[in-house]
Length: 625
Ligand code: BES
Ligand code: ZN
Image (cartoon, rainbow, N blue to C red):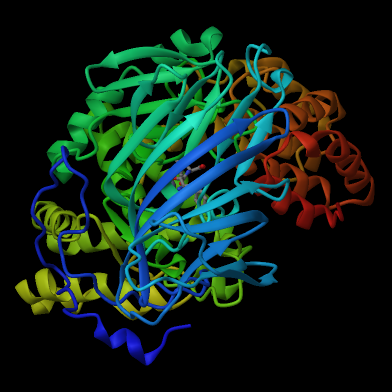
């Protein structure tokens, strides 16, 4: 893959170099000499020889055939004049390749690797600086989910959305699908006239022929190219911020997420200017496999955050924070994923604290710490490491709370040692210095040493980098949080266990996270009678709050509380968010009867889930499609 010839690339960027502010009006390439990219075991492309810098999509969204069809033009830099252009593809039908002179170019597809797909290798003419690949997607395009009208809120129109992270963009666009390779993009998209099309880019409107046009002038990694199309309405929150959603849920979604502009302001005060122009959120149908996805300018979100009481808005703080940690400064490979998510959780918590106060933020931090401690007991040692070794593995196999919470705790530890004002200055410099770059864990460590550790070598000794980054478990100095909101819950639970009826507990004003903590800490051998008592008092089985419901249903399965059975099937068939499916199906799979039930429900639900979720549940239930 990587050859000696790549040494022609000049000028390795210094770790904390400063980059001029982006110019939003012109197409922007990284404002530095392209550096040699680190080896990415999840891409077969060879960006150190010929590197794609520009992507121009021209596609038709064919809802009947459930395929995207058209072409992509790729502009590139050539570091090795002899080398072919090598792209990642997976399950794509390549039809033709042309040079910019319009003449065909010779191309070949390699063997198919089950994890990475097939490399598309294109022979370039001496003058080539761009090629056009004509192609269409197939039913193997796991990034895409095509939904029938019945799977949407309003049940009138079909829906399509994409999910690129981590290595799925290659299933709908042939390109160099590595987060180290940054590209600008444009798109011209044809769709049925009754649908609205949105992307992780500036929407430039529909032309006289009904073609939608988009442009993303800032250089982003391929996993952030995203597209959604459906019956969409827009609700404005501020000049730069609003909500896209199906018409029947748009107004409610706006009310729930109305604090988003305040969050953007808080984030700007903390981390520097928001550099992407607009910040909109699209509420997707319930099969969206994640809570949120930080597609630039347009966060994709699950409708399950619309709890009615703003209790899930930390998810917006999280996806918004990615506008700095992840989208502006990106993990160069998936082993560095914690740089994206750990920084983002840290930033999310800072935003929540500013906008909603320290009590709420401490409550969320304390709950997250409890969850991590619990999850750690179930993970293998290699999965507990921040700088995780993913060679030969799907990046998804390393997915857990570790990059998120352990990553954030590491930054909290640094903050505690250096004090918040000093750490804030470091963070600001880190974002500005690496803006629009993709960096490795080693780059981060170098920056840490050069910019923070040098300021006080005695303090530096208090942080064991090797333990934090390269070792399993949590270092003993990982910060802990005491939330009085949670200790109140502990008090009431103790009263209940000592015999006070559930209805007499002081639960007035409890928020979602308190209910979650209560359910998590119900003793594992609780009797059915007491489950009934809880349900009578608090109506868990009929709640519309998906976080509380999911935790309650896990307990219901564990205790064989049959009164929740129907609700469980209904929930699993209607919601495709992996975070909920995973604990529920795994709990069911623990007994033979439960497994049989899980398989029966899954047979019905599976066709409605996104491929990201089916990949996980297939494994849990040992399901062969
Ligand atoms: N970028 C992630 C989602 C993701 C991670 C997709 C890895 C594919 C591979 C997103 O920012 C995220 O972390 N979402 C969380 C929300 C959260 C922690 C508040 C989710 O979906 O639950
Ligand atoms: Zn995230």
